[in-house]
Image (cartoon, rainbow, N blue to C red; front, side, top):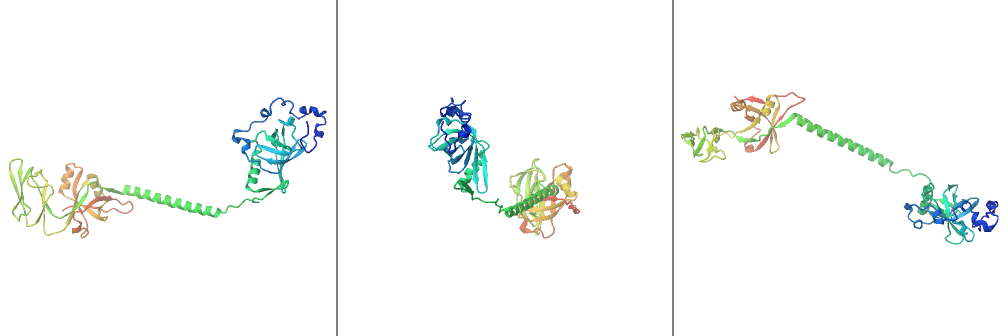
Length: 388
């Protein structure tokens, strides 16, 4: 077999090759595999590499130490290395396997890789293809880095050497201060948000513990006196324009009696909504209200027994009006309150009294809610009084 390298091979073959015609059996470690096709001898390219022709072949200068022979590299890819030889490649070299030393010379340093190769043939005269047996082997990271640097322009070839044109030191991160500032701002934001959430939760808990609302609505009305039915029956007569001493309404009772009710004064009369001649009423149903010259207001509602107990135990009562105002009030009990409580009713009638001048004629007809609040840190003041 003819020597395909630029350096004579007789020194290595002196003991093995006695006749050039016997070169087919003199190729190291190739005699046992010469009967098998080269495709079976070479390790298959992994599927991740797809086809070796799809990888770029770059003119990167390098040296290959193949046994005692040092060859100049022509081109390189991640699957094969192409080296220069003299003349044509002897076909007997196909399938030859060996671990070679690949050297990449830079200015002031060099990189050595030791892949296992197989002679895969030749693309043209004066060239030999060394296919990597395991393209994904231990040499791949360094080889890929050299190829990527060459593609990126960080490495340029200067004759048989290469020069590195990339950065000479690790670039100091320019956003250290910005990162620290962002971290501080984010920490402060998280702390502020956490405090706001804690304050909100504390407010909700404090409100739940110290405040409660009565379920029945409160209506502000003009101060007056009610006239109610004293028996069950039917309203047979209704005269809102009656004068003092005149009959203002009559009721035909279920027992057959006719009850007439007189107006005690020359007052303004307001008929209760839903009352008309022929309306059926029950005892204590309000029929009408009469008002003297006073335009004072009154606030009446029905409180739950639990709410009344809280007010009697010292919780403060507030009237939250529909217009947004909050007015402190006193809960005033009456004989009707005591009677309803004695009957075991869950809601009892009460009156709510505000300070003089707080509620006026403009507030008549407005709705409100009764709120009970207890103070945890300050002393509580009684807000319930008996009506004299």
